[in-house]
Every structure is written in C-alpha cells, then in structure tokens.
Length: 113
Length: 113
Image (cartoon, rainbow over all chains, first blue to last red; front, side, top):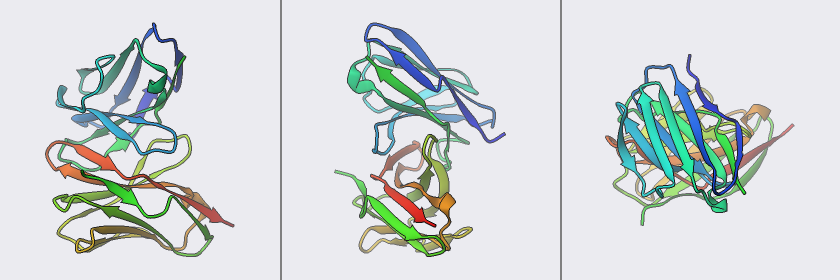
C-alpha cells in the first residue's frame, strides 16, 4: 500500500467554524507533512512531524493546529479561518525526514466563506 | 533570498517528441533536488531526484541534468505521451535532515496528439 489518503476531499466552512482535516498512511513512514497550495502555485510547507513530534512549523498562524495521534495519522485542526486560507491542503509522508521521496495525498480542497 | 524558479510557465509539445523543462535555483548550498509531477486533482508525484554532487541521473524515459555552475536544473522526458500532461515542479532540499522542501513555480506541460 503506497497510498496517502485524505478526508474530506472538499470542505466548505465559515469563518467561525471549527473543522479538521485528516490524513492517513500505512507505509510505516515516520515523517509526515502538511502543505498548502493555492491555485496555479507550488505547494508551501506548513508543518513537519518526525516520529510523531512536531519538528518544523513554518510560522503558520495559530488558527491552524496540527496533531499527530500516532505514526499513521495526521490531523490539521482549523478554527477561525479567513477567506484567504482557501486552498488545497496536501498531506505527504516519507520514510523519515532524511528521506527525500515524499508520497502525497490527493489533498483537501478547502473553501472559507 | 532563496528561491527555486522555472523558466517557462507553459510548454506544449507534440506526442512522441522530447520535452525539456527547466528550473533555475539560487541557493548554491542546496544539496538535493527533486522533480515532481502533479496531475489535475491529484497531489504531486515524485519523478526523479539528484544530489548536488551529480551532473546527471536517468530514470525510465526521464533524465535530470544539474549544472551547478549556472544553478540550472532540467528534466528531459523522452517520447512524450499524453499521460505526461501535468504540472511539473522542481523542489530544492534546504536541509537534508529537516525535511524542508521549497518548490519552484511549476511548468504546465501539454502534449498534443
């Protein structure tokens, strides 16, 4: 199984809502990532988890809160988002942070109204 | 600052022709580069990588060339097929142990039948 799954595929939320994005992999990878991708732009790194510990936070606003409950799961909790946060949110995993080949999920298309 | 950029935002080729996608980078200390392919509605997919101490690396129908003198990276696709139509990103690894990747702006490849 070389797949990274993400749910939901699409999400529409208001600025006062609280929602969560989920990511799952069963490849035994110990590094997991969240990226944000705006239309026609490259992915931008948000967070890196290594062995279930947050190792990189790219100065992401606190309205985005990542969580890694176990080695297979990665969540992104969303609260009080702004319309400019609308984007495709991609999850990726790799064997370790020193392993360059990252496997990406299909993403969650988020719209903030 | 550091940046990874592509020379052309779009490239259109005839099926069966060879494609060359270019990328210029600015950080001479980067020690690893990756090419990703992103099809519509999907996450980026790893194609090929190259270390900074190499000039060339070949895969199946793809070749990556690295010219450190002019900080230039290219992806060559042989006998381009309709399934190759996608957005191609180069990515630069800043720190081999931290898992940080910076993506370039992307080139949209369209293959005409």
